[in-house]
Image 1 (spheres, rainbow, N blue to C red):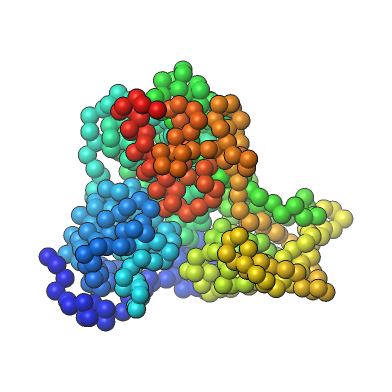
Image 2 (cartoon, rainbow, N blue to C red; image 1 turned 90 degrees about the vertical axis):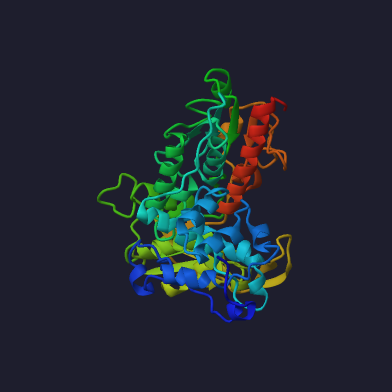
Length: 476
């Protein structure tokens, strides 16, 4: 139908901001923070699109969503078609519409953003994905006749799910193996309910199942079954290793062994998957946060997830302790904003040097130093250095370490001909994601180290394309 407004008129329209659950209320519960757009608001936002002849926003999307086309369909009021257009390249739109760092990707490339606020592409993506869910008419693609080829995907996180969606649409039989009891990988065990409701993940998984993807939970590849057994005994023609990087880093500080010191991975997994927020109903509770002082050490999105979760679990004080300043903090600006609104206390330019405990081995405090910033390091951020004489104790009952993750070695250790890096990540060709073992591909965090959901999905799409070529031609 086309946009009847002239470019100047479009640029005069203010960006539609996402409605949010009240900060005081949401800090005490796990209800989703962002509430989504209404149809009238989505239509108004879609009018802002400049309909660029060369839509550079697409260059910022790791999975190549046809952003200009789906936004035009939103403008035209054809929301189901808009959702179907996204699903051509992104099988998880309700998820990416919630957790994608659009400000650094598609919206970061938007021409509107040069002089005005960028088009709210993420808001529109979430809107159309939620619309089709609410009316119960998800636009699933047609599946071609079977090719007779079997593919195994190890890991049901964003890389595995994205690859599964692309491979099933090419006619291959796809089985996804997940070590835990629920499908979704980091989407279910790592991201809190208030950012990504588990119902959303389950529904997206169900959509893939309707397309023909077979999901097998409680299968620890590398222990329950090996890669070699999948290929030699169970007849899989190709395997994608998409296990992520879920092994936590610790700080190697005195006192890290004390009771009350967690990794963010363990803390969030217990809360998300094992209902640890309810000690009366959970077999795996976390240390009671109620009326206690909790400190999370780190500055990325996982740290924000952990400290905001602790706040919701009733922490008396929830501290975010980060050794650099706000400007260097890698977490999404929205997550930082939400954390501050919810009452999280930021202790920036602060770094722990020791954890202190009582005679019974329980954590009582973190000994910290004030920091000042010097010249940039290899990450491009200014390097923190301790301020002399600034040592002080921060009284805390619970410490959560959120300084990154590394590769779990289980698959690699049971697949001897699978080459790895010095840090234990799987070596894979940058373009094809082929590994040193014929028929085995690897992608996502197990290759690159921890990254965003959408980058992991991009790796899944790359792997699916490469696997299809291999399955079709037989050429390695």
